[in-house]
Length: 70
Image (cartoon, rainbow, N blue to C red; front, side, top):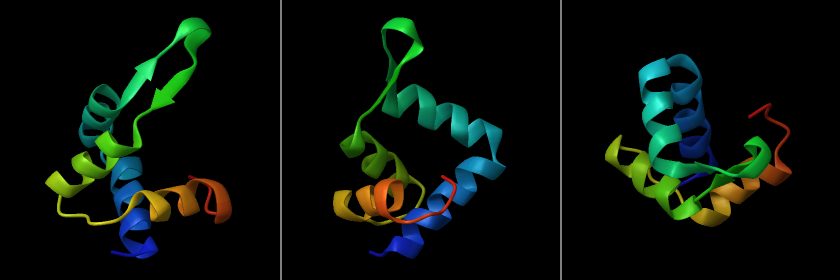
């Protein structure tokens, strides 16, 4: 349960198109005008099916605090 787990998960997504498509289909709803709405609980659960373990706080930290390019 660490920031490294979140980073490794997003590295997998960026390197495997099929996994990314599953992620997009299971964790995101595309709204009006093409806006994306991500469900953090679904992201965490999806990541867990791939062996990654992290919290919503760690996901937020990667998204909003760490300059990672994700």
